[in-house]
Length: 243
Image 1 (tube, rainbow, N blue to C red):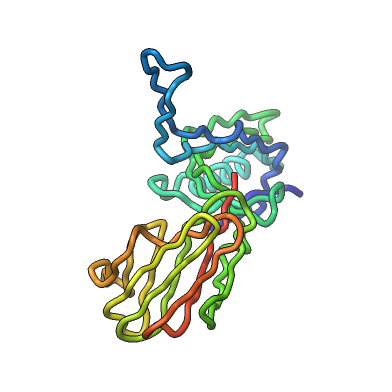
Image 2 (cartoon, helix red, strand yellow; image 1 turned 90 degrees about the vertical axis):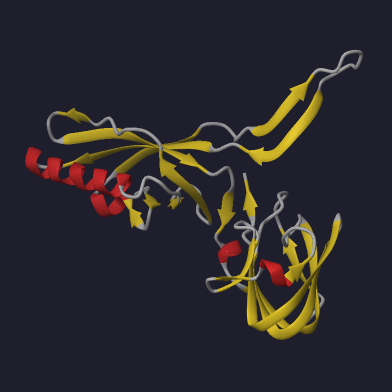
């Protein structure tokens, strides 16, 4: 039986039968096209982001009595509309090995058929990328110069736990990039979250102890991670992503 999970619960827990899944096209790339007098073709001004994608599931639930159907539909509404102010992980049986992050974006119109079947479509607004579940696992980098291969054509924004003490440097080199960060005050470890754009340790911000351009990124293909000084090891959650 096909299913989807949202916010830690599965549609199968509610006896939902999934008839189909629809992904309404690929997300649009956010860019402005500017006409320049005397120049053929528009100038592309990129905003370097993709818009959200719409994902929907058409489903129905059947019960022997109207009351039991009503009870289940009430539980389904409670499940889907809890915490509607944030994104939640979404997985399904159609696209195994990947996770999306989305939130229900509109009301739920439930049609009762024969008084014992409720059918409806659940619409989610999802972040544009699908994330590889394998890429959400931590990878230990114990030796400077180890290589991580990004198997997808999109740059990922990883989470790193940098272990060591004192001052140390981290360099990530790929075919199109070579960036170095210097850490001046490592006390056991420092965390780097490139999605949140922060260096920190637990709840303590450490941005003022790090110098370098931007935050660590993992580009398509091979990425060589090198470290020196007081850094002794890395743990990397690469967050591989694709459309």
